[in-house]
Image 1 (tube, rainbow, N blue to C red):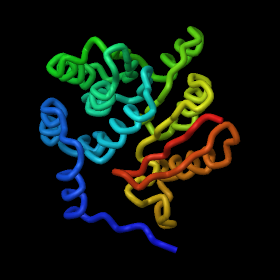
Image 2 (image 1 turned 45 degrees about the horizontal axis):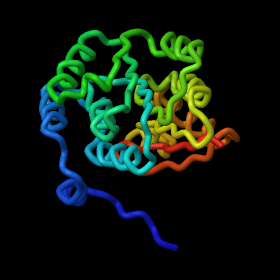
Image 3 (image 1 turned 90 degrees about the horizontal axis):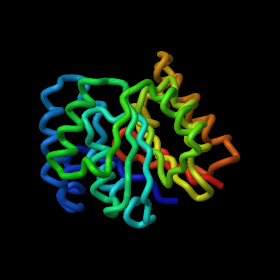
Image 4 (image 1 turned 180 degrees about the vertical axis):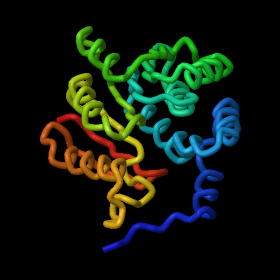
Amino acid sequence: MGSNLTVNREIEEYINNNSTKLHPIQKEIITHNEGLGDIKRMQISLSQCHFLHLIIKSSKIKKILEIGTFTGLSALSMALALPEDGSVIALDKNKETSKTAVNFFKKAAQENKIKLIIAPALESLNSLNDQKKKFDLVFIDADKENYINYFNHSVDLINKDGLIVIDNVLWHGEVVDNNKQDRLTASIREFNSYVNKDKRVENLIIPLGDGLTVCRKL
């Protein structure tokens, strides 16, 4: 039985150098985030940018919901992969980072595809459910304590064969470290177990970035 390759910095750089090139504004967002200190970790990885682009293109996805936008890298990455009639509804409660994200969307000429709703995500999700909205893909990358709540809303917001993609499910590798019993690590462990037992979806954890779970609604 084969084993997974351990991806060090050199291999990651090689992968990025031999994958689809980033849009100039994607690069600009990454550079901007480098100056933000520790919160830059809220940004998705380059490999995740490429993965989202490919899965959207290959699955002919048109309607996307994003829960957690930060400065806009993931929303922009997904919007760039969409056809002209595609759309992203992005949810975030932080007014300052949302303002930054919108500016990047405009610079990339993608603002027509992206609607950013600035409010607590659970409120927005309840509203979207009330409106009977449906999406082809939901991307979750927000506060970890609410991951189960976000996931359950997402299952209701997609049709059969719809996809839910969740970031940070390996949590820097701490999910397998029994010495790590802090609240956030415990939340991720609980979430991973919850999804794996959920009969509404089939799921796979992919070791890209900080770990992605990809779910298909059954």
